[in-house]
Amino acid sequence: ADKCADSHKAGNDNRNETTWKACDDTGVMGSCCWHDSVVFLANIHGTGENRALPLTILKRFIASRPVGVMHDLGCSLDKYIDLRKIWPESRHRVKFGTSVFHAYVHEWPCQVKYNPRYQQGWGLSDGESLERLWSSLSPLVSPLRYATRNNRLAALSHRCRYRNQQS
Image: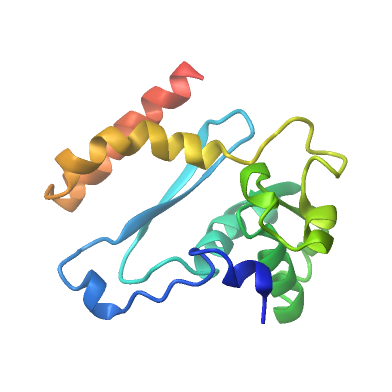
């Protein structure tokens, strides 16, 4: 059992199929660079949060460049990739950290290994870019709740493009 994953909702998503029955899309997964610019958004359809979502986004980047990944469950993703031998040819280009806000709920050995405040190479990055993105997108939640998929995606795209131009 992964104690760090079990202590987070993202790592312990127990919502079932009936939760999503009336939804055409069930969420959005994203990635931002360390300048807080939106790099990639992906529609989530028919599932809750799981490891496949960040791995799918990472796959788009790791083949061509070194990537530092800060994730609420960076430790769990790192262990999972090693255990499953995912991307053996690119694995050396991926470094994991745990976002600063979430780092302190992890076990002490995990904090020492993954907290960016204890590791070199992260600078003052806090790993909370996505939290800031979700906060900036939150005013869209209510008006887009019953929007069509195309209108919802267009609104998110426009807001993210505007946000990137401002940063």
